Each structure stands twice: as C-alpha cells, then as structure tokens.
Length: 220
Ligand code: SF4
Image (cartoon, rainbow, N blue to C red):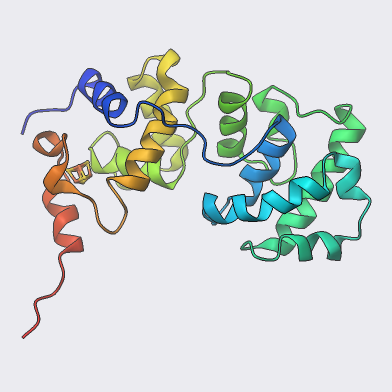
C-alpha cells in the first residue's frame, strides 16, 4: 500500500473541510475557556445549549464567584461531571482575579496552571483565540492519527501531539487541528467511518479494519 504523504493529507483535509473551526460558541477568551472546560466528555452541541444561558448570566470571573457553588452546579447540571466542573470554574475565576487581573493569560505554561485546564484545553485556547500555533489532540485527532498510521495504537495523546507537530508545518497546526476534528466528527467517525467514499481509502492502513468493526451482523 502506498504511504500517505503529508502534502496529500493536508490538501485532502483542506478540500474536505476548508472552513473547519471551533464549534463551541464564545465571544471572548474567558467564554472560550469556560466552554472548553465544560466540553470534556460532553458534546459541543450540549455545551452550546448550556452556555447560551450561562454566558448571559455570568460575564466575568466576579460573576461566577458571586453565587454559591450549588447555584452554579445547578446552572450546568445538564453537563457531565458538572459538580467538578463548577468547582473548577470558581477556582479558575479566583485565580484569574488573584494572579492575572481577571484576564485569561495567553501563554501555554500559564494556562495549564488554571484549575480544570490541561494541555489540550490550553492548546485549543492559544490556537483558537490568541492565534498561537498549537496542535490540540482530542479523541478525534488521536483516532485519526492512529487510523492513518501516523502513530502507534498505544501512543499517548502527548506522543500523538509530538508526532503530528514533527510531521505538519507549524503554520498549519491550528488549521489541521480543526480540520481533523471535523474529519473525525463528520467523516471518519469512531463507530461508522465512511471508508467507501473516503478520499484517503487507497492509503489508509485501517480501512478494512475500521469497516469490519462497524459491519452489522447478518440476520437470519
Ligand atoms: Fe477513516 Fe476509513 Fe478513511 Fe481510513 S479509509 S481515514 S478508516 S474513513
């Protein structure tokens, strides 16, 4: 089987999803941070439903600290892990006020010190809002990188990130992150990859395996 070149990989993603973007609704860095924090193990659609009301009620870190934790928990109750996430939002708000004048910092090393903000979340924030090249590896990005044979099945998200950063030119990191998410969300889905109509089918080592996994059992 021919090997997939970086050039073809990037041009295919660009052709398929030229306008891929962050699908979490937000209008500033603080809202984006809250939305990404809420999105862990939750769909962007659900997060957007909740933040539509949440961002009307809470606009600043002070607003999140002005209510009891139980009230904030109630406001995000529809989201998985809401108790922990509400706690993180209040801790993050307190830290922002104490250390960063109420503003979201634009440096990765500072972002990861915020409660509830890990490496992936920090990468999404700096790339999406601050325009700093970064390649966040979420579940879609990890799955696609492995299916296309760029990484080993056992690689951690950090190993996947490092491999992709070596393979992809820096100026394409942010775009590629969004396009890979769209590719995984709408085309090479976890349970039902569309191998039959995939433009990378001839160079994808997982094509048969992925199709077999999703093949429906025959009924008598
Ligand atoms: Fe995904 Fe199938 Fe395309 Fe491979 S051939 S990238 S498994 S959709």
